[in-house]
Each structure stands twice: as structure tokens, then as C-alpha cells.
Image (cartoon, rainbow, N blue to C red; front, side):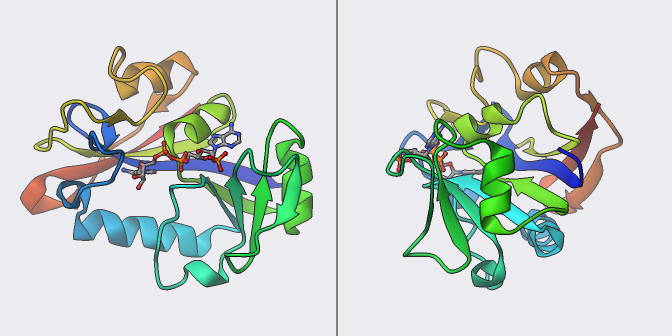
Length: 183
Ligand SMILES: NC(=O)c1ccc[n+]([C@@H]2O[C@H](COP(=O)([O-])OP(=O)(O)OC[C@H]3O[C@@H](n4cnc5c(N)ncnc54)[C@H](OP(=O)(O)O)[C@@H]3O)[C@@H](O)[C@H]2O)c1
């Protein structure tokens, strides 16, 4: 989309999970360095996009324009429960229409999950920022992308034409890194 850069953000366990078997993000996946990185990225974004269970819950969250995916609306509606948010059903309105409804025409759209939401944008990311916690395993958890764990997160991103850049260390003690995947 002209004028809008699309970026994805997730932290995944070594076995590719973004949540545990109860569909919750456990404390084991929360790291100070990654939280700071994610928070700074969302502070720079013009728009945050996520499913109904993936709100980031940060101090600046109420200031951010956001699209919340839900099938409870036919297309687009203001979200009565969340400041600056619009409810969006992609079956009834395109992303371009949703951005216009939210009043966003330029800058970065940060896509923050969950897996089905990431999947919707798989062929459109300019950059996907994949954070990885190599010492955490969440057996039976929720894969970070559709198709994980049958495929690894790397295989999924590569199959959509994305290639890894240089990893940055976010949390030395836990060896958590973030790697930008770009076209
Ligand atoms: N580790 C990480 O970086 C990370 C990132 C994101 C999320 N998480 C965690 O993962 C879990 C997310 O679980 P989840 O997969 O249930 O998340 P989710 O994608 O946030 O929420 C799913 C809901 O979003 C709506 N939705 C999703 N796709 C849609 C579509 N194509 N059209 C219309 N509505 C759509 C539906 O809402 P309705 O039911 O209202 O129709 C659906 O029930 C949470 O615990 C979250 O904290 C972790």
C-alpha cells in the first residue's frame, strides 16, 4: 500500500510458540530487552493491528491508533471499549479501507498477532521482526504462525519471500535475539 510500511512483531520460543497450551503468553516469554524493543517500535508506529486477544497492554497503548480484528462486526466500526481503536472484519473491508477508517495514510503499520492475523499479511511485510527465545520451550503451545510447528517459523517466513538479516541481541542473559526478515 502506497505510503504505509508494514512490519510484523512476535517473540517465539525455541519450538516456535507464541503462547502456551492455554493460549496465554507465559512469563517465560517475557524479557526486559524484548519488551523495550517492542514498546519503542510501537511508539513509532502510526497504527497497531491485532486480533481480539493480542492487545499489547503498554502505558502508551491508549494513545495508539489501532485496528482490532473481530467477526463481531460486518466490516468496520468504532471500538466502544478501547480508545483510538476501530473494529475490523477483513471479510467486509480491505486493509486500505480499514486504514482510511482509522485515519491513517502514512507511516508504519505494526502487525502484532496472533497467528491468523500474521498470516493475513504474510505476502505484504516490508520487515518481519522475529524475536526468538532459544532456551524456552512451550510444548503443546500455540504456533507463532499458521503451519507452525509442522514447519519452523523460519520456513514459513522464507516461503513468503522473506530473508533473514543480522540478529541483534536483546537480552544477553537469556540469549534472546531479534532478526529482521525482509524481501
Ligand atoms: N509472543 C508474542 O509475541 C505474541 C504475539 C501475539 C499474541 N500473543 C499471545 O497469543 C495469544 C493470542 O491468541 P489468539 O490466536 O487467540 O489471538 P488473536 O489473533 O489476538 O485473537 C483471535 C481473535 O481475533 C479475531 N480474528 C482473528 N482473525 C480474524 C479474521 N481473519 N477475521 C476476523 N476476526 C479475526 C477473532 O475475534 P472474534 O472472536 O471477536 O471474532 C478471534 O477470536 C494471546 O495469549 C496473546 O497474548 C503472543
